[in-house]
Image 1 (cartoon, rainbow, N blue to C red):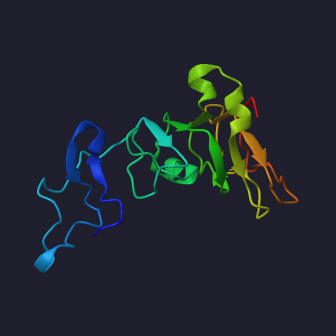
Image 2: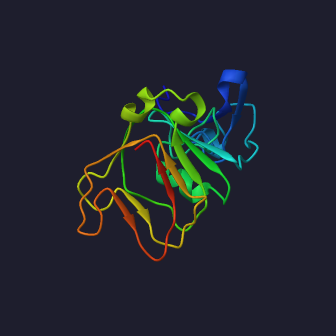
Amino acid sequence: IYDTDPLFCDADNYNYRLFSHSPCVGAGENGANIGYMGVGCEIYSGPIWHISPDGSNLYDGSQSSPFSSIQLGIDASSNGDTILVEPGTYIENINYNGKSIVIGSLYITTSDTSYISNTIIDGNQTSSVVTFENEENDLSQLIGFTIQNGNSSNGGGIYCGNSCQFWIIYI
């Protein structure tokens, strides 16, 4: 019995092809793939990156295969992209890395303010929870979150350095 997620491309829509990084690739007898539909999914390239507590950082960030880390969404994104974060608590510290992107809870698609208190970025007392330090501009936006448990003398919740500009809305 195989008890690991096989990483199908889109099982909800009956696409049982495997992602190239699936644990089923090469795991069968004599190095064969487990399954018969083949390997390879279209590579997702945004512009909306999806994050969910039920996602996986082995997924591609699409709506049907969301990441579980906001930072991975940032890393995958390009200027002008949006990172849409589902409700939950994300224990991580994020850095915009100079990108002009919008990171928002579902508040940005629904205007439902309950998403603000239910979508939490928790810095785990390790450093600033959100960092803007690479000349981000006013197109860099953080919308609809609760920020908690940051720890830094330079901004435990949000740190801004090196001439950054950004928008914070409903935090």
